Image 1 (cartoon, rainbow, N blue to C red):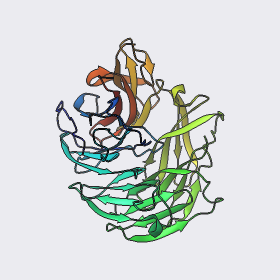
Image 2 (image 1 turned 120 degrees about the vertical axis):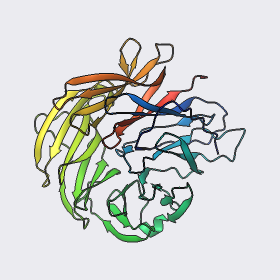
Image 3 (image 1 turned 90 degrees about the vertical axis):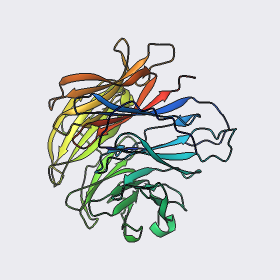
Amino acid sequence: MPSLKIPVLGLAAVLMALVLTAGCAYQASDSNYQDIGVIKTDTEGATLWDRTIDSGYTDALFRMTHLSDVVSATDGRVFVGYNLVYRPRSDPSMHMVWITCFGPDGEGIWNWSVDLDLPNDIAPAPDGGCVVVADTSKNAAVKIGPDGRTRWTVCASTLSFEPTAVASTAAGRYIVGRENALAWLDENGTVIDVKKYTEGQNPAGYVNTIVPMTDGGCAVVYDSSENPGVIRLNAGGEILWNTSGLTSTAENIDGYREILDVREIEEGGLGLLVVEGESGRDTGQIRDIVYGPDGAVLGEKTFAIPSGGLITRAPGGGYVIAAVEDSKGNPGVEIPAGESPSYVHLIKLNAAGHQEWDRTVGSRPGRYHVVSIGPAGADGYVVIVGEIAPSS
């Protein structure tokens, strides 16, 4: 198990962060290129605590297309998933994939690891643990208890597919999914139901997020070759409506599209934040689309955010953006080596998309890239960053 260096730099907070990992390599190296930062702020952007995960080797934290990177939990725990890019020469038996659990005050509680079964998604469990899913035949779904020990495992043959997304429901159950398939599990990992959908019902695409709804149903977010969308299901798993690729009601912009945030708006409706343009996330153009319970578009607006920034809805209304800027105020996805140190910023926008404030967060400058941002209930925000290790 890596020795995690987690400096105590802040105060208490009630949150739970979910960060997904991607990529896994087999080369051996003792280099340390990247660390991982977890920053908790209050609702005004003041830093409450700042933690660093440093295994002593190269830790990779890559944002995939999942949207549930940050969720809040009543017990205030924080789960961060990451992987070692290289298997250490000094410890060739070390596991490659890790999940670290932090407590409400940011203290490290436990580390859970697996060799090469890379998690695709993580969901909180009511007991303070979590459920991890992976597209592998053996460990398709794994329940980790509040003490960091494995409680149960579900194989892909039991589900009839290898899942790419998981969500926990208010009823204490779990929904796991893959393109054209969903399964419902109880708290013991027993499969309650499995549903398959035809391609006509559910456009083929990578299922990256499942969003539980208050009516017992869910929204399934999929990515289909620059044409992402959302399928709304009722409590029985029947399709209520489909966004069919997010075609704009105002002007259809060809090129890149990525859904950055999906939330239930009032009861039964959905709000989507979508970045779009010709060159990907560095374009900084955001569309906010609000759907009613029947799938009708109730409202839509477009506004700009800093290049490479990520956005989430603010609990009290408006939006909060996490972005990287250098010491001269120049935004960037990642500040190149040799240039001014970068700082992580939180930027609050009102409902019309106009800036209300800009705060520098974290305890120090560095070479960062933003991986995730999300609300910690109504108490603040958590930002996950990749940090180029000072020794590199």
